[in-house]
Amino acid sequence: MNYELLNIINTGDKIWATSKVRMEKNQGTVVMLAPSPTLGKIVEQENIKITSLIDQLTERLEYKSSKEGFFFNNFPTVDLAEITMNRDGSISIINDGLTIGEVYTYPNSRRIVKEVRYLNTKGELDYIEEYASDGFLFSNLFYTRNEIQEIDFYDENQFAAVRYFFYQGNLNYIRVYDVKTKQLVATYENNAEFYQDQLAKLVGPKDTIGINYMGIELLALKKTNSQNTLYLNEDPIDESGHIKGNLYQIFTNEIEYVQHVVLSEEMANKIPQDVPHDKLIINN
Image (cartoon, rainbow, N blue to C red):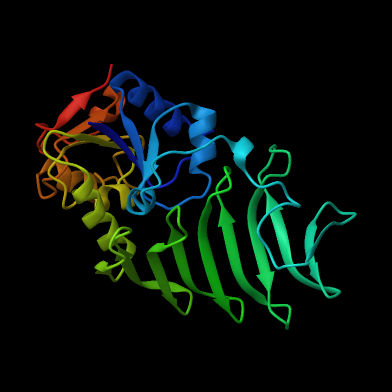
Protein backbone atom coordinates (compact mmCIF):
# COMPACT_ATOMS: atom_id res chain seq x y z
CA MET A 1 0.00 0.00 0.00
CA ASN A 2 1.04 3.56 -0.66
CA TYR A 3 0.29 6.11 2.04
CA GLU A 4 0.57 9.85 2.41
CA LEU A 5 0.92 10.97 6.04
CA LEU A 6 -0.48 14.32 7.17
CA ASN A 7 -1.16 15.68 10.63
CA ILE A 8 -4.18 17.60 9.36
CA ILE A 9 -5.67 18.17 5.92
CA ASN A 10 -6.01 21.72 4.59
CA THR A 11 -7.79 21.18 1.30
CA GLY A 12 -7.03 24.68 0.02
CA ASP A 13 -3.23 24.63 0.20
CA LYS A 14 -0.54 23.52 -2.25
CA ILE A 15 0.75 20.73 -0.01
CA TRP A 16 -2.61 19.01 -0.10
CA ALA A 17 -2.88 19.49 -3.87
CA THR A 18 0.46 17.76 -4.52
CA SER A 19 -0.25 15.02 -1.96
CA LYS A 20 -3.59 14.34 -3.61
CA VAL A 21 -1.99 14.05 -7.06
CA ARG A 22 0.54 11.53 -5.74
CA MET A 23 -2.17 9.47 -4.07
CA GLU A 24 -4.33 9.44 -7.20
CA LYS A 25 -1.33 8.38 -9.29
CA ASN A 26 -0.27 5.66 -6.82
CA GLN A 27 -3.82 4.56 -5.92
CA GLY A 28 -2.90 5.26 -2.33
CA THR A 29 -4.51 6.33 0.92
CA VAL A 30 -4.02 9.45 3.00
CA VAL A 31 -3.51 8.79 6.72
CA MET A 32 -4.27 11.68 9.05
CA LEU A 33 -2.66 11.76 12.49
CA ALA A 34 -4.96 14.24 14.21
CA PRO A 35 -8.53 13.10 14.92
CA SER A 36 -11.24 14.95 13.05
CA PRO A 37 -15.02 14.56 12.72
CA THR A 38 -14.84 16.28 9.32
CA LEU A 39 -12.93 13.46 7.61
CA GLY A 40 -16.01 12.01 5.94
CA LYS A 41 -16.88 15.38 4.44
CA ILE A 42 -13.33 15.71 3.08
CA VAL A 43 -13.62 12.23 1.54
CA GLU A 44 -16.90 13.26 -0.05
CA GLN A 45 -15.49 16.51 -1.43
CA GLU A 46 -12.06 15.29 -2.54
CA ASN A 47 -13.04 11.81 -3.79
CA ILE A 48 -9.90 10.16 -2.44
CA LYS A 49 -9.19 7.43 0.12
CA ILE A 50 -8.56 8.96 3.54
CA THR A 51 -8.41 7.50 7.03
CA SER A 52 -7.01 8.46 10.43
CA LEU A 53 -5.38 6.56 13.27
CA ILE A 54 -8.46 7.20 15.42
CA ASP A 55 -10.78 5.87 12.70
CA GLN A 56 -8.63 2.75 12.39
CA LEU A 57 -9.05 2.06 16.11
CA THR A 58 -12.78 2.78 16.18
CA GLU A 59 -13.09 0.73 12.96
CA ARG A 60 -14.77 3.68 11.30
CA LEU A 61 -13.57 2.73 7.83
CA GLU A 62 -16.47 3.93 5.69
CA TYR A 63 -18.28 7.23 5.52
CA LYS A 64 -21.87 7.75 4.46
CA SER A 65 -23.18 10.73 2.54
CA SER A 66 -23.58 14.00 4.42
CA LYS A 67 -27.25 13.68 3.43
CA GLU A 68 -27.42 11.19 6.34
CA GLY A 69 -26.39 13.85 8.86
CA PHE A 70 -28.60 15.32 11.58
CA PHE A 71 -30.56 18.44 10.68
CA PHE A 72 -30.11 21.24 13.23
CA ASN A 73 -33.50 20.66 14.88
CA ASN A 74 -33.51 16.87 14.69
CA PHE A 75 -30.67 15.25 16.64
CA PRO A 76 -30.45 13.24 19.90
CA THR A 77 -30.77 15.60 22.87
CA VAL A 78 -32.57 16.08 26.20
CA ASP A 79 -36.19 14.86 26.21
CA LEU A 80 -38.74 17.66 25.70
CA ALA A 81 -36.01 20.22 25.00
CA GLU A 82 -36.74 22.84 22.33
CA ILE A 83 -34.34 23.75 19.53
CA THR A 84 -34.52 27.47 18.78
CA MET A 85 -33.07 29.43 15.89
CA ASN A 86 -32.12 32.89 17.20
CA ARG A 87 -32.29 36.16 15.28
CA ASP A 88 -28.51 36.25 14.89
CA GLY A 89 -28.53 32.79 13.30
CA SER A 90 -27.22 30.97 16.38
CA ILE A 91 -29.04 27.85 17.56
CA SER A 92 -29.93 27.18 21.21
CA ILE A 93 -31.26 24.20 23.14
CA ILE A 94 -33.89 25.34 25.66
CA ASN A 95 -35.12 23.20 28.55
CA ASP A 96 -37.53 24.53 31.21
CA GLY A 97 -36.84 28.05 30.00
CA LEU A 98 -33.05 27.75 30.38
CA THR A 99 -30.43 27.58 27.65
CA ILE A 100 -28.68 24.25 28.21
CA GLY A 101 -26.79 24.01 24.94
CA GLU A 102 -25.67 25.53 21.67
CA VAL A 103 -25.69 23.88 18.25
CA TYR A 104 -23.06 24.45 15.55
CA THR A 105 -23.46 23.26 11.98
CA TYR A 106 -21.23 22.39 9.04
CA PRO A 107 -20.70 25.30 6.62
CA ASN A 108 -22.59 25.05 3.34
CA SER A 109 -24.45 21.95 4.49
CA ARG A 110 -28.10 22.96 4.92
CA ARG A 111 -27.42 23.19 8.68
CA ILE A 112 -26.15 19.65 9.29
CA VAL A 113 -25.08 19.33 12.95
CA LYS A 114 -21.30 19.47 13.55
CA GLU A 115 -21.19 19.86 17.32
CA VAL A 116 -23.46 20.41 20.29
CA ARG A 117 -22.09 22.31 23.28
CA TYR A 118 -23.90 21.59 26.55
CA LEU A 119 -23.73 24.01 29.48
CA ASN A 120 -23.95 23.34 33.22
CA THR A 121 -26.22 25.25 35.61
CA LYS A 122 -23.56 27.97 35.96
CA GLY A 123 -23.55 28.55 32.22
CA GLU A 124 -20.08 27.02 31.90
CA LEU A 125 -19.15 24.54 29.19
CA ASP A 126 -19.96 21.02 30.42
CA TYR A 127 -19.32 18.79 27.41
CA ILE A 128 -19.28 18.84 23.61
CA GLU A 129 -20.71 16.19 21.32
CA GLU A 130 -18.93 16.15 17.95
CA TYR A 131 -20.76 14.66 14.98
CA ALA A 132 -19.42 13.55 11.63
CA SER A 133 -21.23 14.99 8.63
CA ASP A 134 -23.17 11.72 8.21
CA GLY A 135 -24.57 11.85 11.76
CA PHE A 136 -22.00 9.51 13.35
CA LEU A 137 -21.23 10.49 16.97
CA PHE A 138 -17.49 11.03 16.64
CA SER A 139 -16.46 12.14 20.13
CA ASN A 140 -17.34 13.67 23.47
CA LEU A 141 -15.22 16.40 25.04
CA PHE A 142 -15.68 16.78 28.80
CA TYR A 143 -14.93 20.01 30.70
CA THR A 144 -14.61 21.21 34.28
CA ARG A 145 -14.65 24.97 34.89
CA ASN A 146 -14.37 25.45 31.12
CA GLU A 147 -11.13 23.43 31.01
CA ILE A 148 -10.80 20.27 28.93
CA GLN A 149 -10.52 17.08 31.02
CA GLU A 150 -11.17 14.18 28.67
CA ILE A 151 -12.00 13.30 25.07
CA ASP A 152 -13.67 10.00 24.17
CA PHE A 153 -13.67 8.75 20.57
CA TYR A 154 -16.49 6.36 19.68
CA ASP A 155 -17.13 3.36 17.49
CA GLU A 156 -20.46 2.84 15.71
CA ASN A 157 -21.99 1.51 18.96
CA GLN A 158 -20.85 4.59 20.90
CA PHE A 159 -18.18 2.62 22.75
CA ALA A 160 -15.19 4.80 23.69
CA ALA A 161 -12.37 3.01 21.87
CA VAL A 162 -9.81 5.76 22.47
CA ARG A 163 -9.76 8.08 25.46
CA TYR A 164 -7.59 11.18 25.88
CA PHE A 165 -7.01 12.55 29.39
CA PHE A 166 -5.78 16.06 30.16
CA TYR A 167 -4.15 17.79 33.12
CA GLN A 168 -4.24 21.58 33.27
CA GLY A 169 -5.19 21.67 29.61
CA ASN A 170 -2.36 19.41 28.43
CA LEU A 171 -2.75 15.87 27.12
CA ASN A 172 -0.98 13.52 29.53
CA TYR A 173 -2.51 10.06 29.09
CA ILE A 174 -4.14 8.01 26.32
CA ARG A 175 -6.01 4.71 26.62
CA VAL A 176 -6.85 2.43 23.70
CA TYR A 177 -9.50 -0.29 23.94
CA ASP A 178 -10.31 -3.19 21.64
CA VAL A 179 -13.76 -2.49 20.17
CA LYS A 180 -14.64 -6.19 20.11
CA THR A 181 -13.43 -7.36 23.54
CA LYS A 182 -13.81 -3.95 25.25
CA GLN A 183 -10.47 -4.63 26.94
CA LEU A 184 -7.71 -2.06 27.49
CA VAL A 185 -4.94 -2.90 25.01
CA ALA A 186 -2.53 0.05 25.13
CA THR A 187 -1.66 3.21 27.05
CA TYR A 188 0.48 6.20 26.08
CA GLU A 189 1.72 9.33 27.82
CA ASN A 190 1.57 11.61 24.79
CA ASN A 191 0.54 11.89 21.16
CA ALA A 192 4.02 11.11 19.85
CA GLU A 193 4.05 7.69 21.53
CA PHE A 194 0.51 7.04 20.31
CA TYR A 195 1.25 8.04 16.72
CA GLN A 196 4.50 6.07 16.54
CA ASP A 197 3.04 2.85 17.90
CA GLN A 198 -0.24 2.92 15.99
CA LEU A 199 1.33 3.92 12.67
CA ALA A 200 3.87 1.09 13.00
CA LYS A 201 0.96 -1.34 13.47
CA LEU A 202 -0.77 -0.03 10.35
CA VAL A 203 2.11 -0.36 7.87
CA GLY A 204 4.66 -3.02 6.94
CA PRO A 205 7.90 -3.40 4.95
CA LYS A 206 6.06 -3.58 1.61
CA ASP A 207 4.29 -0.26 2.22
CA THR A 208 5.45 3.25 1.33
CA ILE A 209 4.78 6.48 3.21
CA GLY A 210 5.26 10.01 1.94
CA ILE A 211 5.50 13.01 4.28
CA ASN A 212 5.72 16.74 3.56
CA TYR A 213 6.89 18.16 6.88
CA MET A 214 9.75 17.54 9.32
CA GLY A 215 7.52 17.96 12.38
CA ILE A 216 5.09 15.52 13.96
CA GLU A 217 4.77 13.56 10.68
CA LEU A 218 8.50 12.81 10.75
CA LEU A 219 8.38 11.89 14.42
CA ALA A 220 5.45 9.53 13.80
CA LEU A 221 7.55 7.42 11.40
CA LYS A 222 10.08 6.43 14.06
CA LYS A 223 8.93 2.82 14.60
CA THR A 224 7.83 2.05 11.05
CA ASN A 225 9.60 -0.45 8.79
CA SER A 226 8.02 0.89 5.60
CA GLN A 227 9.83 2.73 2.80
CA ASN A 228 9.52 6.40 3.72
CA THR A 229 10.05 9.50 1.60
CA LEU A 230 10.23 13.15 2.61
CA TYR A 231 8.88 15.48 -0.08
CA LEU A 232 10.66 18.64 1.01
CA ASN A 233 8.46 21.72 0.76
CA GLU A 234 10.47 24.12 2.91
CA ASP A 235 13.84 25.80 2.67
CA PRO A 236 16.52 23.25 3.66
CA ILE A 237 18.60 26.03 5.22
CA ASP A 238 17.74 27.59 8.57
CA GLU A 239 17.96 31.26 9.57
CA SER A 240 21.60 30.89 10.62
CA GLY A 241 22.58 29.61 7.17
CA HIS A 242 23.01 25.96 8.16
CA ILE A 243 21.17 22.90 6.91
CA LYS A 244 18.18 22.19 9.14
CA GLY A 245 18.87 19.73 11.94
CA ASN A 246 16.29 17.07 11.09
CA LEU A 247 17.23 17.17 7.41
CA TYR A 248 20.91 16.80 8.28
CA GLN A 249 20.09 13.79 10.45
CA ILE A 250 18.16 12.21 7.59
CA PHE A 251 21.02 12.70 5.11
CA THR A 252 23.63 11.38 7.57
CA ASN A 253 21.35 8.45 8.43
CA GLU A 254 21.02 9.38 12.08
CA ILE A 255 17.35 9.22 11.17
CA GLU A 256 17.31 5.85 9.42
CA TYR A 257 13.56 5.59 8.95
CA VAL A 258 13.47 8.06 6.03
CA GLN A 259 15.10 6.49 2.99
CA HIS A 260 14.55 9.22 0.38
CA VAL A 261 14.32 13.01 0.21
CA VAL A 262 12.65 14.44 -2.89
CA LEU A 263 13.29 18.14 -3.54
CA SER A 264 13.65 20.67 -6.32
CA GLU A 265 16.96 21.29 -8.06
CA GLU A 266 17.05 24.77 -6.50
CA MET A 267 16.75 23.27 -3.02
CA ALA A 268 19.25 20.50 -3.84
CA ASN A 269 21.87 23.10 -4.78
CA LYS A 270 21.63 24.51 -1.25
CA ILE A 271 22.65 21.23 0.37
CA PRO A 272 26.33 21.47 1.42
CA GLN A 273 28.66 19.20 -0.55
CA ASP A 274 30.08 17.65 2.63
CA VAL A 275 26.63 16.32 3.52
CA PRO A 276 25.88 12.83 2.10
CA HIS A 277 23.65 12.97 -0.98
CA ASP A 278 22.73 9.26 -1.14
CA LYS A 279 19.09 9.83 -0.16
CA LEU A 280 18.62 12.90 -2.32
CA ILE A 281 16.27 12.71 -5.32
CA ILE A 282 15.78 15.77 -7.54
CA ASN A 283 12.21 16.31 -8.66
CA ASN A 284 12.30 17.74 -12.17
